[in-house]
Image (cartoon, rainbow, N blue to C red; front, side, top):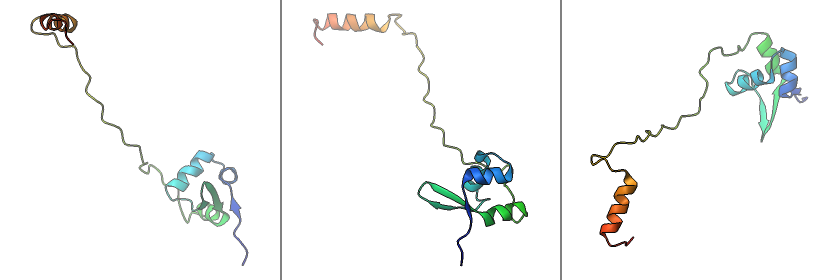
Length: 102
């Protein structure tokens, strides 16, 4: 039994007249079968033939996995103090009342 012909992502993209990013997307969503060892990805020629002959179809408008967004922290707003003093003036006054400690 002979080994299947294996193509790189770039070779596959060239044969299908699409961009390598499209081929990677088809690999990710399972439209195009691959062999992968570590980071090395090879596309069997039979997967390309299946795609061309319509046995598998590219998933159009398939939901993509999107990274989860971290919840935004609420922005702090400067709230006017009821006594009208700015925070540094209050801190200075408290230190003076304590006798300069702190």
